[in-house]
Structure formats: C-alpha cells, structure tokens
Image (cartoon, rainbow, N blue to C red; front, side, top):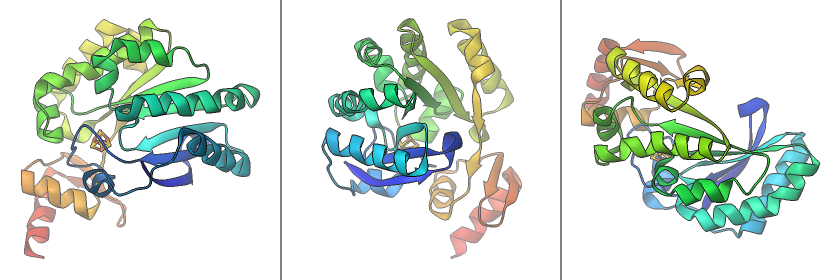
Amino acid sequence: MYYRFRASRFYGGSATADAVGCNLRCLYCWSWRFNSRLEGVFYSPKEVASKLVAIAEDKGYKVVRISGGEPTIAFTHLTQVLEHLQKYLRNKKSLFILETNGILIGYRRDYAELLSMFSNIAVRISIKGCSEEEFEKITGADKVFFSFQLQALKNLLDYNIKVWPVVTVSFCNTRSLASLLERLARIDENLVAGLEYEYFKAYPASVKRLCKAGLLPWFSILVKERKVLNSNEFRELCRRYSQT
Ligand code: SF4
C-alpha cells in the first residue's frame, strides 16, 4: 500500500514512492497518520516500478526509492518491485535506495541475501535513538529490538550491499551517541565515517505526541519559522501547545 508517488529533492533528486504501514510507532514519524490509519492504495509491483520510472524519466533523476512507511514489511512485494526495476536501473546507471528501520533485515539474514541478488541497490538504515532505552522511548517497541538495526548493517555488509546508517541525534545524549559510535565501529569503522546525522523537525502533530510522552529533544527545528529550539524552548512550546 502506498499513499503517494512524488518527485523529491533528496539525493540530488529522486523518484519516491511513499509506502504505508510500519512495525514501529516512532513519536516523531512524519508518516504517522498514513501508517496508523493505513490510508493508501494498493499497487502491484509492476505499477510501482512504472510510476517510479515515469517520475525519474520526467525529471532526469538517477535515484529511485521507497520511503514513507517501512518497505520491508512487504518484503516479497519489495523484491518484485526490484525485479521490475533491474533492467531500467542497469541501463540508466541509476540507483534504488531502500529506506528502512532495518529491524526485519537484522532479524532475517536471508533478507540481506535476497537483496544481494539485485544490482544498483543501496540501503539507508534509520536507527531509532542511540541506545536501547532511547529506542524504546521513541518507538514504543521493546528495547531488545534496537540491536536488530545494528545487526541489519552487519548482515548487509556481509552480503556486500552498500549500506549506511542515519540517526536522529536530537534524542541522543553524548554518552549514548559515543556508545553507538563504538558499536558501529565494532561492525565496520566505515559506518562511523558514513553515519548521517539528522535532527528533529518540529511539525505540530509530532510535537504534540512528543510533549504528551514527555520526550523532549535537546535540539530541534521549527520548520515554518526556521527557528532552532533547545530543550527549554521545546518545553515552552509544549506548554503553549497544551493550552490550545
Ligand atoms: S520507522 Fe520510520 S516509518 Fe516507521 S514509525 Fe518510525 S519514522 Fe515512521
């Protein structure tokens, strides 16, 4: 199921399919509404591939991707989309980027093996929090699943798939971040160099969820106002939101 197909500016321009549904419930998720209500339309793998190719051709993009929800929860569908895209990706020297939280690839090593059958593919794993405890607060899932995300990096590297991690540092502290870097380095030190740092973009709906849960980022950006907030300013924002 997907809720939109779009041209996006990420990766220097990418044709993007936004999937619906996820195995986590991150409080800051920008696809929350679609994932929790399962709002979207079912498309066949062939239709998804055709839509992505049409956008990429129209815009001259070299990257196609699936984002939005968690694409690996429909793994067979995902591999079928990749099958339909293979010829195009090779001919156009383009890249498919899988954006995932990595949980299932960490749990199922065979998923990494199956992905390795395809060429022109890269995987971006969005790690939730820098520690088990932060993971649990952000996602609502049991902390044991945190390490599956790290295992996913290892599984993919073992199958020679290009992969890099990203973390939203707004919810980490220096200690947990240092520990994460150490854990990544133990898998492969290139993961540390390649780690992408994100920060929390404060959209109203996710701000309300975070405030309600008492999870306050030490650094965030109010997107519309283009303003940076520290944790005290975020607390003040929570107070304002609670009065509306
Ligand atoms: S893993 Fe991604 S899609 Fe799933 S809830 Fe978290 S932010 Fe949203």
